[in-house]
Amino acid sequence: MYIVDNNSDNAYFNIASEEYLLKNKDEDFFMLYINPPSIIIGKNQNTLAEINTDYVNENNISVVRRLSGGGAVYHCHGNLNFSFIINDNEESFMDFKKFTQPIISILDKMGVKAQLSGRNDILIDDKKISGNAQFKSRGRMIHHGTLLFSSDLSKLEKSLKANPLKFKDKATKSVKSRVANICDYLENPIDIYEFKKLVISGILEVNKDCKIYDLTEDDKKSISKLVEDKYFTWEWNYGYSPKYNYSNEEKFACGLVQVYLLIEEGFISSIKFYGDFFGKRDIAELEKKITGIKHDKKHIEDVLKNTDLDSYFAGITSDELLGLLF
Image (cartoon, helix red, strand yellow):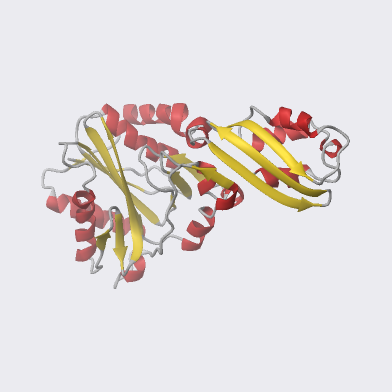
């Protein structure tokens, strides 16, 4: 097994690195990385139904979809991420204990008593410090997990707080849990980089044949190309979301406005406005302008810039309408 201490501070690059090592290498890898503030969405999730869009945008939080299923997780510089990328012997996939036990043993040596709970969570005192997920492809698999070390838990909560009443779909939903930081259970304080060194040492101790692998320039170029083609794209991070319905209503100066949207592959396939508002022009004209574009603030904002909105909703502003649509 090779150990990759991935020092990139780019969430798109780090998530793409997993796919690159999975599909372009034959060896087994254990990789560690720390992401800047970001939300990592499960493959089968509706992105907008999982995130607090306004908070995410205001705080420049990256949103990246991963290959594996499961729920959305918040990453930041206080969160250490680990990945086992291996050849599957048809016995490893869905065996979460096999991959979490080395981490639990490392924590135990640090004086922290942790345990695997349910299928894929590591807990300390009934509080979640690690969520895990897996993905399999052509005889190889990824097992990856988070390790909350010194995360800002208030930002975690704010980032993932979406309004469930606005969305109706069959996508995988995140399960909110009581969470905690590992650092709060350490007798002697250390920072996350010292913690990372201890994790590497722990893996080396039980895998005597492990070697350190540094990503080559060719590796980095290939991963960057994968980021450009896939992981940085709206189509992957938002458009890949399953079909869903979105609805919302708000009382404005012009009256009550209700909106109902059907979103398919991230695009608005239909939209209807209802309410007791007044307007000089038929609202169906505005609905036609918005139909067929991405369910994305920037694209709808571009449409509204060239629209006399007051002729459809007397007294409503562009920002107010955007707030209704997200």
